[in-house]
Length: 260
Figure 1 (tube, one colour):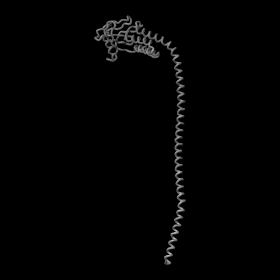
Figure 2 (figure 1 turned 90 degrees about the vertical axis):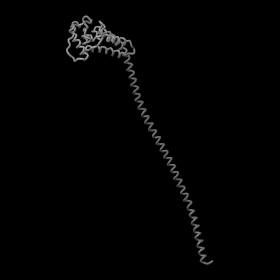
Figure 3 (figure 1 turned 90 degrees about the horizontal axis):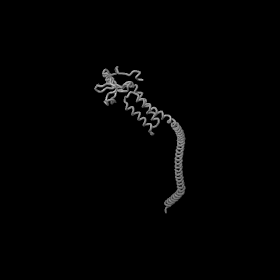
Figure 4 (figure 1 turned 120 degrees about the horizontal axis):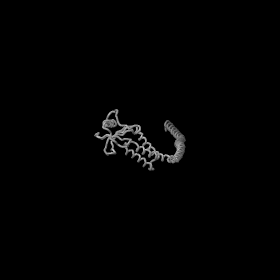
């Protein structure tokens, strides 16, 4: 073998040895590096898992805190409600006690008021019978209804008193008003037009003006009037019905001694 060729072969062998030596060294160095990477990866995975557990615990803690605060608010609300309810119950108890006391006093009041109302109804009937007989049946019926009402248990004492006073008020109003109305003349049964002036005068007239009369408080009877009152009574009835403007009307009026 030539010397140059031998030299090249030795050089190639040396390079091959160096390559094998480097490869072995690289492999030897790569093994710890892989172990380090795996360890780092495991550490990172464990850290992520730990963080997830921490996050879950934090969320659970927050949920428990929210529930606790909600329970505290509910307890406070129930406490306020119970305090208010206790005040309401106390007030109701006082109200019941007051009502019971009033009812006890009302029974005593009724024992004094009921006889008074009976007397007032009886007196009202006497007033109507002694008065001029305008709307007589209507007013008598009112007194009869009041008498029947006093025997009705479903009507309270206050309502009975109110109706009795209402009847008296109505009678008082008659003394301040004037009206014209149609009704039956007791003496003949004929329908006539009546003219009432307060509680002082009651005159009547037929629709054809053929008969004109008045209730004479002295004799307590219906009597015919002279013909000179025919137009005056007709005029007065028209004014009371708002068919004519108010004007002076000459009508028969009982004297003071008769009115007494």
